[in-house]
Image (cartoon, rainbow, N blue to C red; front, side, top):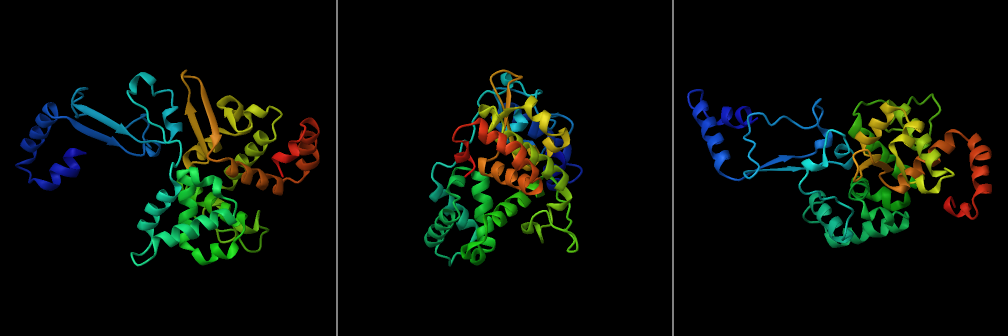
Length: 304
């Protein structure tokens, strides 16, 4: 990459070889930084991009990698290979976070302080304040709000809002476009005019079924955070990978190499997918849910 993206574009054919040798000499004597940004989006067969040709001197080279947790749960990544691990747990100051995002999204003439206040009121009115700690969900909702501010403030349904978030996540894993035909019955009315959902309906149905199965599991401790083995029972491998690629699911590696846990990106997303599964499979209300309510005291509070 150094050759093709830098040296080949800066130097003529006669000076390229000497320039490359100079770069290698510098890298052997000066501390340098290699940034592997978005490793979870790396499509190669190897766990990480090749660093062939780059001097591997530990005291001279620092490799900074950013990735969603599920990629680091890959068994090819050894804990011994990671010197320092920093994990983003959430947004510590939502107001400041929203302010910085809005400064990038809105025109300079816009009153940013007022926009932040309007967005916070919007979250409260839609009962979405809980997502303020999630960088990804907060950003998705904020961008949706900015793109269609007047409609969002007018009181769009939660279903519409979560559908928009679902579509944005689907696009990350599969950008294929297809619309639902008007003559066919829509899975949900909110799916009308959405272009990234129909191509992924098979995965969405499977993931929604898994979300429902875990949320109404008799083992309460695994309803939100569950093991890879348990997920395999409810979700095909292709749909699991889609959920990881899109960000619907997050995987984390524990202290032991085989100790891996998964969860939905946010409990409200799991609840939305569960509601979608209920809508598509009303028979489970009398079957699964009625038995669940009888088996767990006060469990009706969880679904109220």
